[in-house]
Amino acid sequence: MVNPTLDDQTFQQQFEQAQAAAELANLTEPRAIAAYYEPNDRTITVRLRSGASFSFPVDIVQGLAGAETQDLTQVEVTPMGDGLHWETLDTDFTIAGLLAGRFGTKKWMAKLQQKWVQTAC
Image (cartoon, one colour):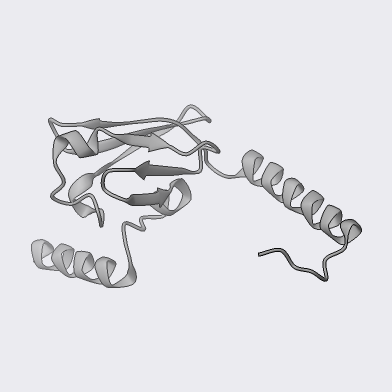
């Protein structure tokens, strides 16, 4: 919906601010250039623009746990490189979130934490 009280000058200012924020994020936040599924160990590996890479097991990720190989191989890097998307699973994650260890909702993470504690004992 278009804001009827937004004049052209205000719109232009907000647009330029948004562009500047996107450029800054592009320079300072991790960006993926590739991602792929490793079926042998059920992990997703992500290559970052910085040259670093990381991987995570799909079975700890909400929306990916228990998914079939043909769905997991359909991982896509978002156009800005700031996220991963699985169309057939209707699942999305940010690169920053994955690097921070956020693999689902708070409820999902609490269950995951509980599993980790049980297996550590």
